[in-house]
Image (cartoon, rainbow, N blue to C red; front, side, top):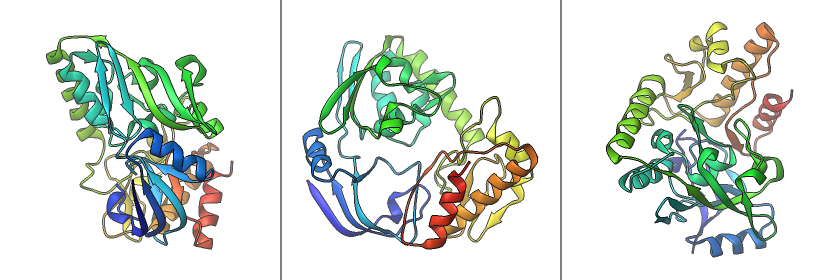
Length: 296
């Protein structure tokens, strides 16, 4: 297992923000992962850093990156994936084996652990649809059935109780690989038309959709597409995305998020809840901005 000290994480994040992290653990197996978690009970865990804003001021603490826990085991319709497997990789591998149910993941840059934690979904599919069991860490390894995971829109038992996903077992459906690939291509075309490419640094959807509303539509209605701050701006094609166009900082992004959220609150009395995570703590202004963004 590799351990990195004073690691500059900026290049690994899809937002291309971040600073020096005091300690980064890179486990290569579930056993190594559990060992770190047991020795560091409050440690922060991240996958592909595609749904995370890391402070440009860095973080004085320890984190785990799970991207090396990336084994995929396929036996008939049963598929077991490590928490660090990237969504596109998993969807492509099961497609090769004529297995359907994860086509929507082909356009998701995140990893399986994070996608299970937030119950990622798109195109009328959710990751929870085909889950059979989830192995989690909760002061030891525990296995939960799908019905025990408390899956809801953009959340799960993991978020509510602070459980860490270690490994996931799916039960998929057999289908012609050509049909599966056609659906995946259709999903990729939709993503290209409606979401910015990762060549334009972004973190996916910024806010969750409130009940019976579209966050993007609300933001569009209040003129969010005209907003910018420092080196970042709201994407011109969809108001629920922020893109880093000129070496923007984490503080630029948090300030822009607060302005977006405030406009919707003032016009519709609806609180937009951040969908992304934030890792920081060293800068007082950033801490205050994040607090305001999460205060209902």
